Length: 97
Image 1: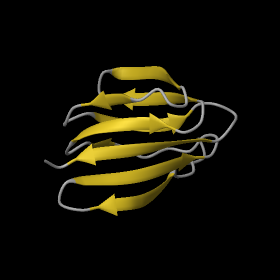
Image 2 (image 1 turned 120 degrees about the horizontal axis):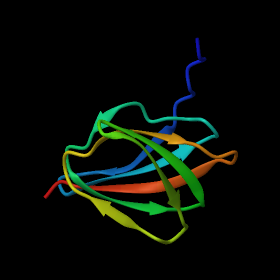
Image 3 (image 1 turned 90 degrees about the vertical axis):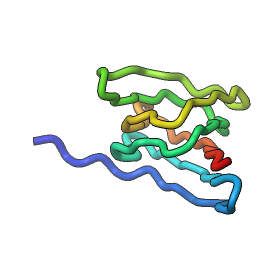
Image 4 (image 1 turned 30 degrees about the horizontal axis):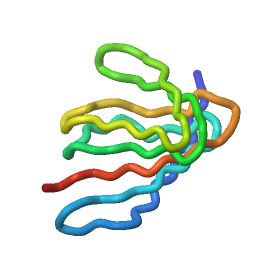
């Protein structure tokens, strides 16, 4: 049996009527756990990193490049895992309106 992964650390910086801003810190091997996004969102990488994304359609790898943001729409469902040997961090901005 495989040991459980450590949890990534979310730090909510803003949560108001318009948006939720969360900093996510991922030590090597850390995961968010399965979740479904309830809002459109933008990810702003702070450090480089390699993510393993477990999705209902299978696994994918994605590379984080500092300063290269991306966005996704409401309904994305996945588990995000640090697949690299170094920690990484990003800011996630969820748009409520």
